[in-house]
Length: 355
Image 1: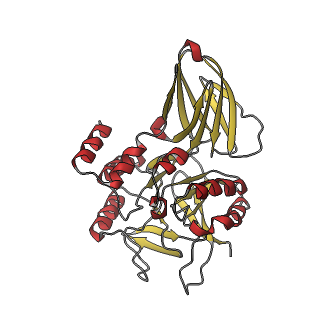
Image 2 (image 1 turned 30 degrees about the horizontal axis):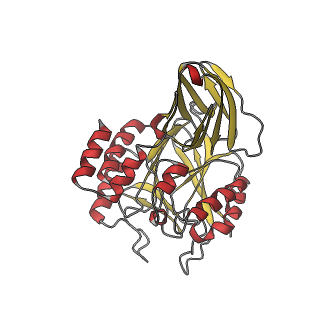
């Protein structure tokens, strides 16, 4: 029903933001002969589907995949999941299948016997649904520093006990294919997965370049009792379709710790440049939603500096230290955030300098 409403909205008033939101709805589904692969909530891009083999790029530390197979497609399948935690396993019908030994900690390969009909599997760490404490990193705004971002990734990999990175966009400068290829090459220096929405610099080229590689731009996942919501504000605001999704995601989070991420801060707290939403009314409307929904922490990028502040009483951080040209005269260069989280509260947020 929501997809039908979104299609009706787009037909009535075409908008690039709405087109991107509808692109999200196409993620995570593919058909090949007698096999139909579906990823719940579109939480992985299906990069390749061939005979008895599927390759995914995950958008969350836990994903649910269903393969509907007819009699011609039963037997052993190879399931490859990129951008997944090092301790992820595959669980199917009460059985656990360990990953094969590989060269990359964030790439998991499984050999799975599939039967005719629906084969539902979860690829995740054993503790993904067990409430408890964990630690993650956050960053944004790599852009022209892609050739040196492995320095940042090396520094992140040296922080003890990190489970994954959450990111607020602007991975690239111009969304060129060569930039995305270089980004994935640089991810070889990172020992944990990297989950991100887009920034304004990802809008320089066709959005399909993001969709086919990394999947959704707007999404939500839960890990160990905490909720993470990513939304696309790449062109200075949220589309009404995304606002509708956000209402549902806020309701889903309930009273659990809730981290909200988007590229642009709704209201620019720095004031040295206009770095917020195009419409202050839209920015205030978003903040009202987040306050009413009890969001615990907001993370932004876009402004190439580090700022700790509050927006509408919600703790907020701008962390634009991925390597893009830093804001002049503030003395803040490359950096990232470390968040200590548990199922009750965001315990701490600290800045880690790379330069």
